[in-house]
Image 1: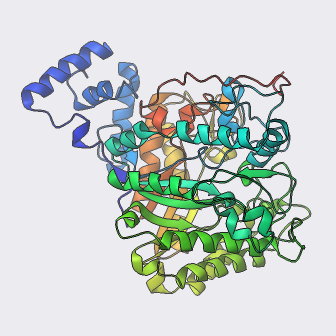
Image 2 (image 1 turned 60 degrees about the horizontal axis):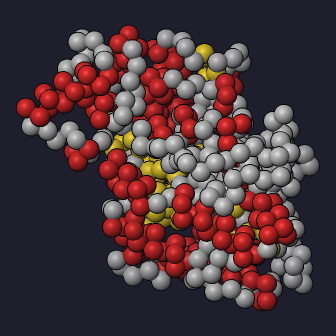
Image 3 (image 1 turned 90 degrees about the vertical axis):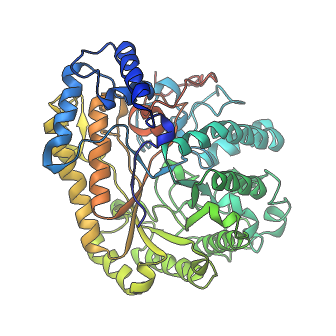
Length: 530
């Protein structure tokens, strides 16, 4: 199991001679203007070097140090970072990432079916109305501006959102793995059996083309695979590996704005295509896409394969199914799909080439998650597989923890954001430890939490943003996950067009690496926020 906690590397500035370190101490005192009681500590020096990410008053910082000493936890020099991070909002869009200064809800709910999406810089800084999902935005742009502009707008976003500086910053922080959410459109050509003309007319290696969803009247822009491969090669040169994650499937396989068709219901599990002869189930379409991903990665030579850690063949399968009325999927069908796609991976060369399969599952899809999915996992994968290439993967968020685990500036949570840090730490420890211990007890073998954050409340305007509090949240969650051998990927790397969410959800911002965007993201002319 790879180490989850990664300290700030020596290259970041802590490989100083004694004389140089003393000079840094003096500069730290000057730049932070803190009292002499703490000015000589290595923590202060690095906080100054890291743009005072966790700088606060003497009293508040002293509280942090005291909390970190409790429970036999060593006091570590902040900031600590997870070994893995997501590149959310890059190749798979979610509306709230692009909500500008008016964003409110993490993962928009059905009370706001118009969505929170306001922009897609650099081409699109304002729209006439909000957009709720990537498929909806793509269709609107294609209808109003045409396919050439639409493809160009998406590629301009992709080329500006994650750049060379991001890869360098992640390397400097010691990040070793990035999870890259992608949509089925990256392998749209795999759907040629459904409609050869629609899905086989573009060059998948080099073209960004607008393609329709096989079921809904929505669309996506393909991801040129040669371009994506060049990014993976870039990661490898910086000693970073990619986890390629199929985040959205044809027709929508889960409930959420990331599914590509929201606010429409997921149709993946029970319906056939509507763009061909209607004989292909969307579930089979998903298998075609997952097989194409497997086959593509298997073409990598040994050098390029150094940039790959694993694949996820479906993100959050059937999320929110357990509460759906009427249900739009069968729990047995969900597990059967995962079993079939896992079999495709098993029978490829990828396990022998050192690539792992991250099988993502989510509690909200099952009425009795531990009993149902735990039994399935241990019966469908051998002990050897579970300890070599098959990774059971879950997500963990306190933001939806209600009165048990969420933190807020308003009533209804487990704690208020300004409570003493030892009280906040106790709650976060209990919540994260409960998740990690249960995860470890139910599932044997390799484990991952491919999404987690510092977000304390899904209504982000009322979530905790205090940096000292976030420091405790960061270290306590990392400690619990590490203690139970759970590999972790923070959600997410950056959110420059969603500043409301940055304090809890943007690792780049949290660690002081983000710079304000010079690209505007203005409220829609017909706004939902009035």
